[in-house]
Image (cartoon, rainbow, N blue to C red):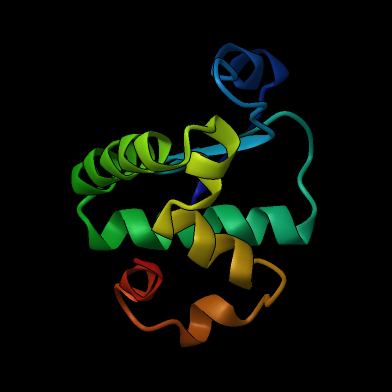
Length: 112
């Protein structure tokens, strides 16, 4: 299933409560502030793969849990976000446009 890409500066501004959101993945949608380059789109597609393997809801539950855990540890919103294992996998591989074709399932666990 291909994600549905939506460009909505209004929506991304609305969800930019804690950090500036350039793009967000809410399965099966990728919503961005502006047209995405290939790297940003690949980053968001990695999140689609993560969400699929966790049946979507468990991804969001774990995402919030990891964010809170990281925030309590680092006391910094940006660092808490960057240390989420889902984000670490996506940022490490977003420039590798063939990553998803070779990605092993649950690879984000490697970053815990």
